[in-house]
Image (cartoon, rainbow, N blue to C red; front, side, top):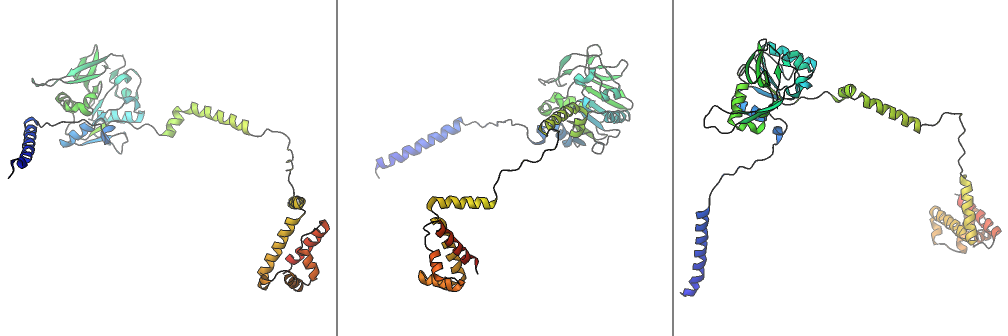
Length: 369
């Protein structure tokens, strides 16, 4: 076999082998994690990761956006994490939550900047000192020596009323607390500057996991944990009647002014002015006079003849084949008229009297059955 014929395939095989060998020599397999945006419930529920973690640990947990008693029957031994602003809790719910804590429940809430104002929930608990405190941050670390990093606990500091028992705290009574746990009746209240350490991706860090486990310790394993990530506001009509009455008053005034501007002015009743219009007969007569003046009545005469002949052919099909004198004789015999008069009616009129006579004869022919 010719060596030149084997040279080209051999070079191709050698090149392919070199490419494969180079690929496997430089190939390195790596696992790449691509972060994606939150979707589903994780987009609006910042405690979704905490809820799923507790479910895997067989802890009874429920995420809610309401304090409705049928959906959240608080009993002693339960835990309530109020993640939304405490200022949105009304008087009735505040009294129910305070009674729940005093009966043995565990409440976690964040006073935030609302600690210095009058809030129904704070008044029902009677734990906070309204004196203002500064914003601060604290780095939380785990007890493990080899653990690096941590999670930041940031927010407005808060103060407790003098004499309130403090079981655990981050901060002090002089500068304020970032976290404090105190007793209220048979239950426990855990006050936290912010819940960012328990939200979304922060729970990936060991320090946040350990801190969350300590926060839930008082009633863990005794009842249901309710995670309130948001609070539904009042109904639109209720909010509009309570907060929006100035806008409603302004809109009513504008509506009254517009109605006064668009309505008819008061005064004596006046008759309706007559409309300028012609009777139907006047319109027909005016149209006929116009057509007559245009060509001496020839077009009107032709239309009248065509109308009579069309009606005759429908009533008497035998007349279809007739024309001229035979047709005029047939019409005269059928309608009892003079044949010469009928023939004259179908001739083009020379003047106004002839036009009038022809139209009268044609009208008689058309009106008879």
